[in-house]
Image (cartoon, rainbow, N blue to C red):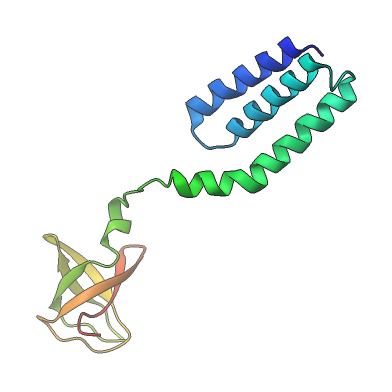
Length: 142
C-alpha cells in the first residue's frame, strides 16, 4: 500500500477517536501515521512489512502509552442516581435491626434501610451501599 492509503487510515481512525474519545483509535491513528512515514521514506515496501510495523506500533502504544494517557486525562465522573447516595449521611426515621428493615431519610427521600446491628430512630447513619430498593447503612460514628 502507498503512504497515501496509510494517511487515509490514520485520518479515519482520528475521526473515530474524536467521536468516541476512548483512547483506542488514537493509537491506531498514530501507528498508521508512522507506517505512512516509513512507507514514504522507503523503509517498508511490502504489505507484510507495513502490517507488521502497524501491528507493532499499535501494541506498543496501547500497552505502554494508553494507561498514561488515561491517568493524564482522567475524567471526573459524577455518580448519579442511587450511586450518588453511597457515602452520604442520612437519619433513621424507623428503627433498624439485623432481622428487620427500617427507614432512613436522605435528601428528603425516605428509603428502606438494612443494617448489621440495631440502630434506633434519630441516629445519623452513613449509606454504605444500595441493594435494589434498600440502602445498607451503619451508624455515622463508626
